[in-house]
Length: 333
Image 1 (tube, rainbow, N blue to C red):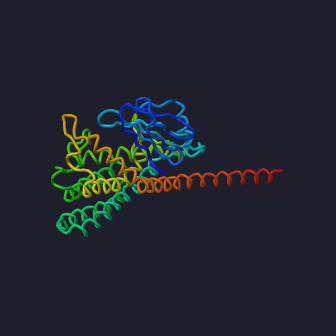
Image 2: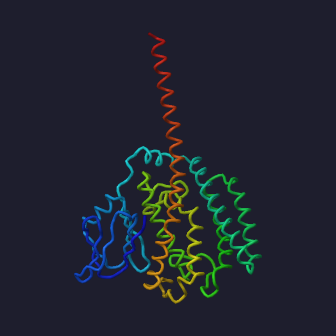
Image 3: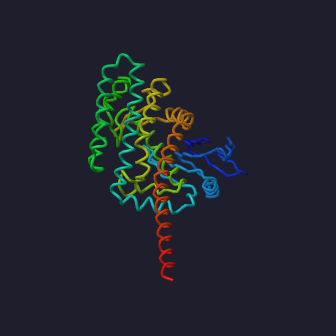
């Protein structure tokens, strides 16, 4: 399964016998079969008919439209999962504070566990920053032990925020100095590595939202991230333990010189990846997408198991109640 990235002005997409046909100035310039696609990302002046969008939705292919200079995503979701009971339980549990805290702790614990695992590997292969990473790892381990002590999601966010400051100080030690990365900043990102992180988080968040919709969840109703207008809060929840995978991908692009400082430009609107850089990035993202989607699927399977456990318990309780009612009726005859 793969993604299709279209980032080209003046191109028109058409549906033809189960394939996407690309035309430029009326001439046919390429064809891509729909069957192996899982996602289509569109950016720039791209035209496509409703028939093609309908076919993509029918085949379960989510469409992400990246608009504006910074590529704000709009999602066109495929057909949802048929089990509405899953969404009903999800919404009800979003008001259950103990359940939300339990889920949130597990999400942040896995996030820190992945950060610790990655930084341990980086320390072993980057002896010049061994001291800095050792210091950060001690801090992350300390914050990991504090997760269970959090009494509510607000205090858990405090633990997560403090751990994030430690984590990005460690990331700063391994990102090349030429990129001027001094920690996480966004809206807009002010340096190339933050621009790369923001783009990767955006695409990954969109992938999660589409996958959640297809699995029968409402992407907007979260447990750790509360309801917020226009935000896919549940996708934000599942993004947390997957952020280290996105960070690894971003650092790999820089270290392998797939992307370099010249691929970025900085203006008053922030630091942005240019067209040539985006072409390189999308190719690399497509090659790496299987690893990222494996992580997404694992998180959704885990979440589904949590919800199904609640559903199974409620079914057992209902059957038990029905049994007692039948016995009581027989006893009075």
